[in-house]
Length: 127
Image 1 (cartoon, rainbow, N blue to C red):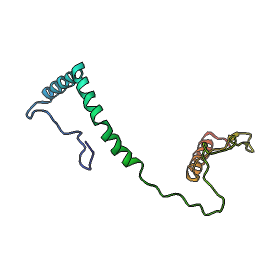
Image 2: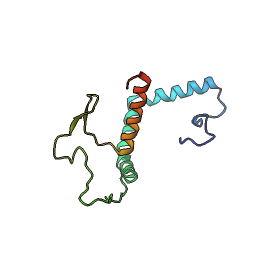
Image 3: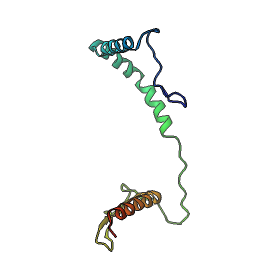
Image 4: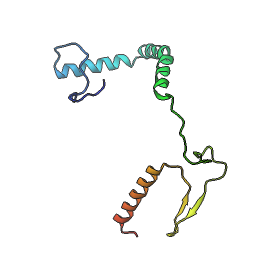
């Protein structure tokens, strides 16, 4: 059940009306146990296998919508990922002697990671 503002009390009761909390708990547990039987599991799996192609198609339609290609402003510039790199990743050492490996994070991610590292170093008293 999707959550909406004001829907803070969990899912709506789907069982018979007029039960006390203890009766609701017993009823729910009985339903759960009924669904654990091999025959019930086989029926559920059969329904799932039948509905799977349609569900997968809807999911892929949501996920892989057309994305326009990224146009780079610099001539000859291209986007590099670890899979398209034609050489081993570059490794380098900074002034403190820490060994770094070339990474492919976005500029925003790189800056946020660097700021987090600086904050951690400052908290620990390192330069």
